[in-house]
Structures are given as structure tokens and as C-alpha cells.
Amino acid sequence: MFLPGRNQTSLPATYTPADLQADWEFKILQSSALAFRKPDVLQKVREEEAQAGWVLLEKIDDGHLRFKRPASARSNDHNLSFDAYRTNYGASMAIRLLIFWLSLIVGAILIYLFFTNRL
Image 1 (cartoon, helix red, strand yellow):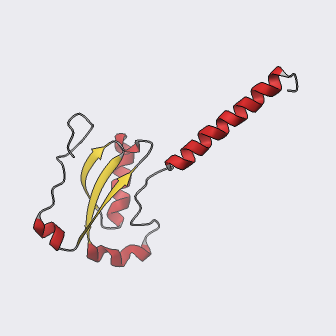
Image 2 (cartoon, one colour; image 1 turned 120 degrees about the vertical axis):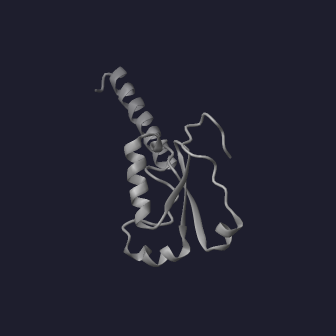
Image 3 (cartoon, helix red, strand yellow; image 1 turned 135 degrees about the vertical axis):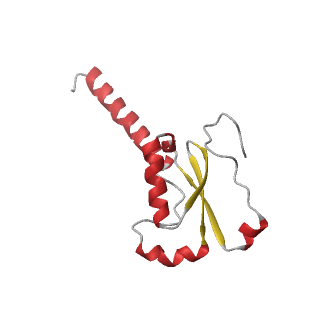
């Protein structure tokens, strides 16, 4: 869906019947930290994905990129240092939430120890 004002850098992807019949693979890569807003990260991701044959179709927003590649490119996947079919970039939301809750727990313990004069 094309929503103006959401940091999109291209028009929405449209797939012609020829695209869909010509053995193309499509994927969306997401970042829960909105990492794609940084031009250097975006360039790095594009270069990594290009190693697997993926071509950037559009930047949907700062957290989502749409790619396509010919299905024949999967024959080179065993030579890659990453999963060609990855759909998440960076730390997942689960890891980020775990770090957040652990920080709260440690903070609460330190506050308790401080106010009970045990620290």
C-alpha cells in the first residue's frame, strides 16, 4: 500500500503477469528498530541482499523493504554467509523486549538495595 509521507523512496511495487509467471521470488525484509531510515544501513542491506541476487523494489517505510530475485539465484544460496530468505534485520522485537524487561528488573533490585541500605 502506498501511503504518502511515510518515508517512502519509490512508488508501490506492482507485479505484472509476466513477473508473476517468470519464476521471480519476492520478499519483505523488516527491521523492528526502523534501521532503514539510516542511508548507510540501507546501503549495507542492499549490498548484502545483492549477494543473494535480491534487487530492491521499494522502500515501503523505515522498517520495511521489498525485494525480488530470479528463482534461479537460489542455486548460489549455499555460498552465502547469511540466510537468503531472512525476513528480519537486526535484533528481533522479542530480544529488544527481553533486554527492556531485564533492565527494569535490575533497576528495581538496585533501587530496593539502595533504600534498604544494603548497597
